[in-house]
Image (cartoon, rainbow, N blue to C red; front, side):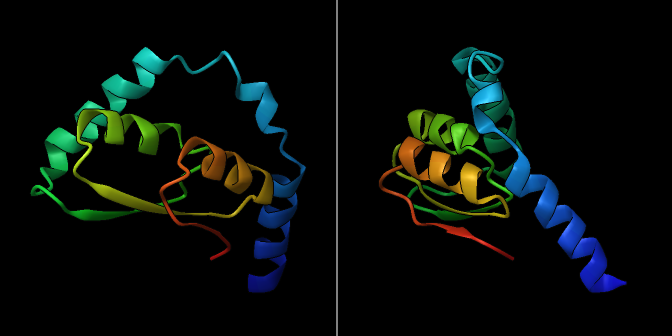
Length: 98
């Protein structure tokens, strides 16, 4: 059952077309959400953050706009979204998988 659930989830994310998100999430919304998260976790200057389920990396990118001293890496299940996150965050290490 466990593998079956993972397989279903992997199929869903692998079939997802990230281009459907273009224009739906504005940079302003991403920055507001990133500011909200950063306010809650209050990372010290120069911290390293791991973003689990980083999606297309827009929130990571917004966090780096707000706090350029951070280093943020990510993990994403979807290969397509992983590639998008790498494009959006070329200085970060972004891995596909669990």
